[in-house]
Length: 223
Image (cartoon, rainbow, N blue to C red; front, side, top):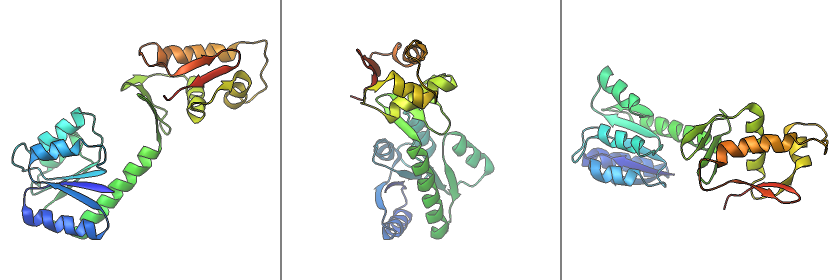
């Protein structure tokens, strides 16, 4: 995993970098806020360790701009600023943890591992298809970062499509998996629910996700 360390004190930066590399992490460093902000936006970064008192722009500004840019990489603030107000402000801006200097490297390593573990678990519960994002744990659904309200059956239907992405599925299969009972070909309840779902996730954007397979059923396309 790759860690970005934004720290202007060379001795502190070198100490942390060596320690983390000994634990087989890849560590990149930045010694001012502007460079750190640019590097922190890169999607290959798994965790950011951020000092607050930086040249260029300060650490809180770096954090605020990262979150405004929808960068959700975990951020561990590591700073000499130790007041309760400083901690509250940093956490309210979107930091995931806060440590005060001087610090124990053992504690820093434990917090790094905890944040990476938590992030990995959260990412495994997120399904994405183009600009559609579904939290499989909380059942929250977003399209182009806008929340979409779905009923329980609409959500179950969407999850079934995601699990069968790029595969055409017929109405019988949909009914059996989503409603758990035999499909009556004389009814159109499957089509009714699919139309409701398509209206919610398709209509407001150009990239349509759920398509009709004429004479067979439906497909959710990822490409």
